[in-house]
Length: 414
Image 1 (cartoon, one colour):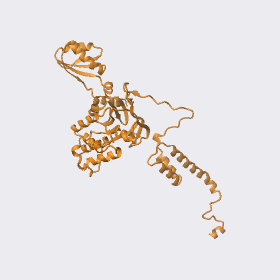
Image 2 (tube, one colour):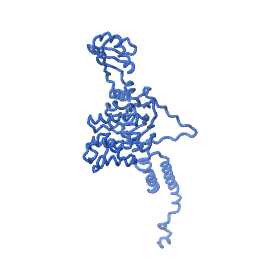
Image 3 (cartoon, rainbow, N blue to C red):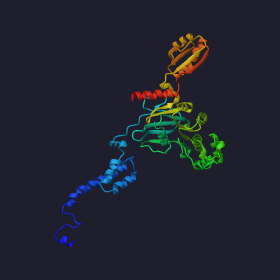
Image 4 (cartoon, one colour):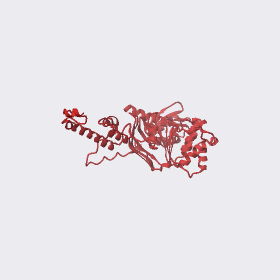
């Protein structure tokens, strides 16, 4: 070492003259890059792969510029980046929602009319790489039974998970006008410790959400879902349908104000489905129920409000009957005991009838301008002709037909 210094050679801790000055711009650039990444991280509403505090550690502690570049390439969530508002401008007012009485356009959601709203969602988006939820607006009236329908993969479970707080949206907001302990959730695949009895499972749920309810609430919940005879059995031997009932008992034991059910009838036999649907229908007015199903007949049977999801977007929201009336031509097959031609001529002359044609020797196919007009006009015409009505059946006036008509119309325009 002494020889090197004596010879005028640079030592290991001495930089060549002018090197520090040459590196100064590079060091400044690296510091600026780190500062930019930290500011970007602080302002970001969401990041990818890692929590924000972990990305901060990566940027500051991993050797520059590696940490900053890792954040820029992998951490920045560019899908949800939005341009900042210009200074001095005011934000654009949101577009008012449509009511259920208005005819919704494809791709829009109509907010249900009437009643106070217990669940409101605005612009909910959860993107799993092209699938998930996209800009979903929701309005659920208090005391209603709200059926959420859609094909597998439409986003039903994701939406219910966000409403219940088990998942967070990438953007958008949810407002629930109920206390946390007054919200109960039944997942689509419930699971319990097999060594517990049904009574112990429900009692544990009661202790968590309604400790003052007492043992009577446990017995009542178990009896309500039809498991009174199996209360002392260990749940490890339960069928999937019994597990589904047990999950509902756990949800009901706290007497919730809002009940969220994900595919509640999927594991039940026809008799069990009918019992559960009757139970849900009986809750209308006493509590709000939001349930998802791909069985459209179940939704039509109990739901007074319906939301239709397709590919993560809410195509329709409003009264079930309004959906049928909007997307289906009101039509009936009327059977008459004699005087068929006279009744057909009278109906054809009525202002409410849009089409009348024979459907056999004693039957008439009648299309009306609306369901209400047909329901009022058909009996009046038959009575006015003095004819005897044998039967009057709506033609394809069900939720499944309306669902196919709505999704088909939207798909054709996509």
